[in-house]
Length: 428
Image 1: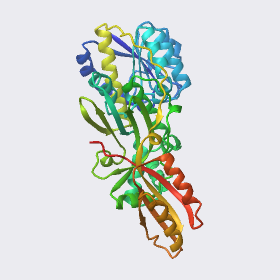
Image 2: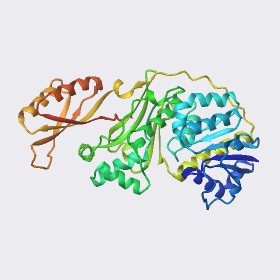
Image 3: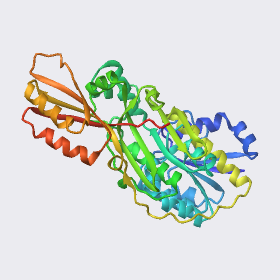
Image 4: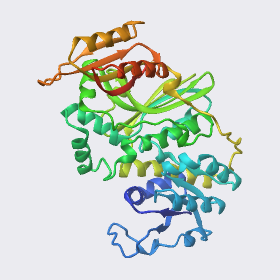
């Protein structure tokens, strides 16, 4: 019999319990062993939990789980960092297999946890930490193990993808869209982690560590969220044949790992441009498999819980087959490079100017110097003497672009530089 302890009974934890209960016979047939949920760690023992058949397995004492020699697998679904990190470390030291959906924890402590698992001859699984129901961790770890990954481009946050999709579809403000997303349960009451791009940051950090056998931390990765995007940007981008998406990218360029999280203009017709609403999408480019695409629900009760169940099956098979832990090469702390600083890219720039010929001609002159850009003058549909200008640059490094922007900002008739967004290259 394989005994499991579940830490946490929130959204994903209760989903895990339901799937385990409903599919117990099927899962036992797959692993050819009885599966028993022996403990569930919760904070409040007095809280009613009507769908729990056996209340006797509830506990608020982690030590009861830790010191139980019969517990084979600890499933950590409490979230957060400090308590979860302590529980996972102590479980690994006790030679228990750990399964977690905790992206923050895996992103920040990847190397330490992998090393701790190896030293204690056990395993840690984290499929649900990235892209919920999309099996991207297993694809990279197993299917692409003998391949050489060159690039990963991904939409990894359903909340921001939903917000951008609805803003474009309904031509409404981000504030209105966030309220709608919160009412539908697609956004947290405090959506800062999503809007600021931090949720995506943790996930791409995990994929970078796994795909390239490196050790990077979230603070090493440049990150910009979607808070500066307006419905004007989405409208103008659409008129030019693009959609705006929050893209996380990893590129191996001359054996240098370049990583970035940032909104991008993506050409309509491209795979990632087709990923709308709360869905996630991932493209992996490699030497031998060439191009692989994955899409599906990136979060939610059942997609995430099902990813945890997938890890449970693998963990149970590991126990059943008495597999030993493979020795890992220690991961060196790896320098990473700002993807957008390194690459030459085209950029979308939106500025607001006074509607006068002198300012228009000055801007044209700045970009005409080396035929650097194409300019589009938009009707602001009001009587005010303001003119929105959209600039699509030729390929240029961002540090050079910044110097040009400084020249534009110095012009008397330029009121604001509203947005500067890279245009994603098409990868064949």
